[in-house]
Length: 539
Ligand code: G6Q
Image 1: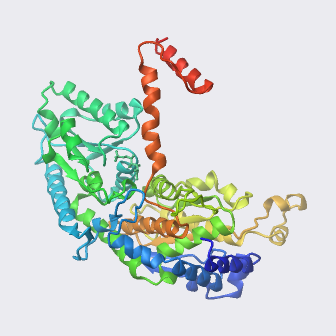
Image 2: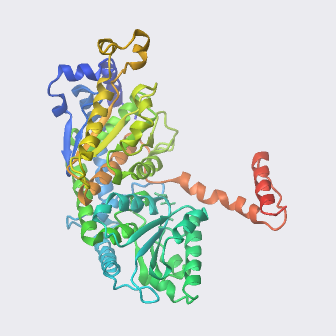
Image 3: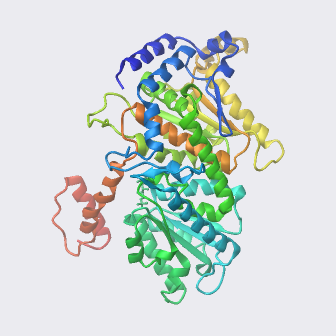
């Protein structure tokens, strides 16, 4: 990152540091137009950022000098850019609707991608039409996805986002936590004879998912008279690991596969999207892929100065590395996107929460930010105070739609009035002179003054539909990619998650041991283990 081109960026940041957004807008009547870009149904107004034309130019030059263009091509063409796992990164192939082949080691993956999607579509149609029946001959009504992380967050978020397009008679549930409460509360609501369990696990070795799946299997067999033939009618799997799926007792005919070049957090458009396809149907799913594909094409071909993911990536780096911002808020003004911040937390923080560069050295710069957020307007009555008047700089993405899926009175106008007014207030602030003119007593003026100059991006589309949704997710995926390249880190591994998967093993054995095990942890860990053992009647 510490190149000449980056030094020029830093210099230009210094030139803009003293400019207030209030003055920047007053001085340039074309500012909004100058800093607006469009793609795949989305308009990005990034004019309320601490930028000047010269700074944007330097940032783009830096991206060019960092070979971002070459790296994008390397991803789209199946090079093994996930170097620490020696894998290609090809979630873009899952939504490649161009008809062009995509080669991994000389093999075109597209026929396999299409074949799985066709099998998914046939299965979903059968379930949706009531052709697929449970063990006792009744149609499926309740669908329970059991998965965690990348095998949960995407479909859970998307099923909520695209609810207006869903078949309402199918009820969707998501179980991820190994805490039995999660599963138990869902099982209380579903009808065994009409429930389909999707066991979603790329590796099919994940403790949480396998534990929940086994308990669900036991519950179902217990309710349906113990005939193991019932499993074939009530359990399907989504995985890359055929052997383990078979070993679990799920017929491979009921398994939908994907490939090691699809990262968990990028897997929604793969078979991991099965619950979503069941909910919205194959055609709407295809429209979502179209939206993804449109943003993919834009990312791959548009010049950087008009490239939405690149612009968002560069602005994020401006605040993280130029201003020391530690977090980034995502604020969707649409209740259907309530789970988007949680989804983006994984996408961004698991991808770019890294401190070792691509040469294996500790980085000397800040990398991925803390992502957080809540849907508007709820956040306004909670944490926006800190964004407006706190001591920290928090860049925000405001995401909204011109039309509501649920037009009712003037709700939408009110929602969007808040959406617009917030970014205006954050940028413009309120001066002491304005306060005085409003008759604010002198003692209160410092408290009622707003510095402003708080940066925001506004992302606006006509409506939330499968296409705009797909494009939005691809936009964030490619923003994360852009930042990973520019920070010179590997975005597609997750050794921190892998660590979590093995850590609990030793403690679990010690918790379950019949007789007191020799404990060799630190004193705190030893005491906690003993406390749990005693509570369970073990000594
Ligand atoms: C995603 C991560 C991680 C993963 C889960 C579930 O990118 O690798 O969140 O998705 O740990 O893994 P399985 O799908 O293999 O069960």
